[in-house]
Amino acid sequence: MAVAERPEVAMQLNLRPVISFHGVSKVYPTGTVALRDVELAVLQGDFCFLVGASGAGKSTLVRLLIREEVASTGRIFVDGQEITRMARRRLPKLRRKFGIVFQDYKLLSKRTVAQNVAFALQVTRPGQRHLREKVEEVLWIVGLEDKVDKYPDELSGGEQQRVAIARALVHRPRIFVADEPTGNLDPDTSWGIVQLLLQINHRGTTVLMATHNREVVDLVRRRVIAIEGGRVIRDEAQGSYLRPGEATL
Amino acid sequence: MRRILAALWFSIKSAGQNFRRNLGVSLAGVFTMGLILFLVGGALLFTHSVNSILQAQQANASKIKIYLSDSASLASIADFQTRLQHDPRVISVSFESKDQAAKEASQDPDIQQALSTLGSNPLPASLNLDIKQLTDLARFDQMAKSTPIADKTTATDYNPDVINKLHTVINIIEVVGGVIALILFVISLVIIMNTIRTAVYARRTEIEIMKLVGATDWFVRWPFILEGIIGGVLAAVFSGGVVFAGYHVFVQAAQRSLLSLPFDGSYTVTLLILLVVGGVCVGALGSYMGVRRFLSV
Image (cartoon, helix red, strand yellow):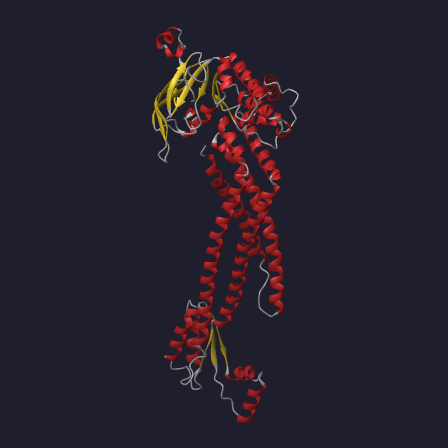
């Protein structure tokens, strides 16, 4: 049983959830109901997989979390702050708590690896001292210290995702969100990326990874939150992609 | 302070970088903006030129001769002249005697022949008025007709047809000029907004990343606005040069065809400043509105 599911244990350990959803629903203007009455709590330092079929609501959950979308009903807290009614001008500060990567790496093709990573600091903390050292440090963490001056086109898919991870890490986020980070990668490369995320988690960063990748989820055996039809149908401390006896998700 | 300077430097640097990296789109934007500024500048200069030609015509036209009766005494003529000189609508009044009128008319050989055949001088003396407003001519015509010292048969040389026509032409040109300027303004705004939107669209990933890592809206906007300003200034300089050269050629051609059109240097300078200010405003405003759509991440 995860600590998050035992509020009394969490209280005793003086742990407050870094992310919590309370009765959150999301209905898009088209009428599509993407999330229904979601209750969720993630503690600082957790590693969670968010699993579910395409269209189950994983991406909507991620988008609500980083306030790309606003919840229709319910409340979402990040680091103790309610974000559902947060003013637009305060969003930049909220987003700096997150490190975010997507399936399509979203790298700038005309900038080198180092410039792509530095970009995140330049646009959020202009005049940052020791920029080069900070960039080199995260590139070393993701294992790309020898690709500093390469352009994204010269890298493999896995390497490009590592650059995206380095860019998300460089401002030392509290929460790392990965939306299908291995979606475009072969199994070996995917495994490398997940290892990297586990390593980031090991350094104390909360990691939330939305994924389709059954092998990875089953191998890692960490917390699994399963979503189906917009509802959380399962939340297990050391879960697997499917519940025993479940044919598909 | 250090952060503000760094932010400013980053904005300027990325505006320059973006301009160079997307040279094709940037130049297309500058070219479109330049073309429209050229049209606006050209239209303004053309209207200004036509106006100055017409004003010269109007200055010529706002003259009226009050023919004096041969029986009018010199004292009453002098009296009438003084009264006219004190009228605020009048620029100047001059007296033309019968002899002067004959001398003036003799410049035409036909009239000279007619005068010498007659043996006497039938031409009346006149008071020649220069009037400020073209529209006041009719009133002076009326005034002359009710004056006993004016010639009974032909009181003045006032010709309402010519005056009315000139007046209509001036009105039409002003209205047409206004309409053309308005249409150009609307077209330019639409084209510029779309061009800039295309330029911004080419960099939507960059904007998306900036928003996702937590850059503020203004931090995202500034490089684009600066880039719009750079483009606006370049477009203004380019179109200003072309308009200036075109105006020079136009004035020379007009002078060859004997139109009284002087080269108006001070207006040209005003126009160049106006184009630069316009380019900067349109570039900045267009970028601001172009980026706005992509900021809603």
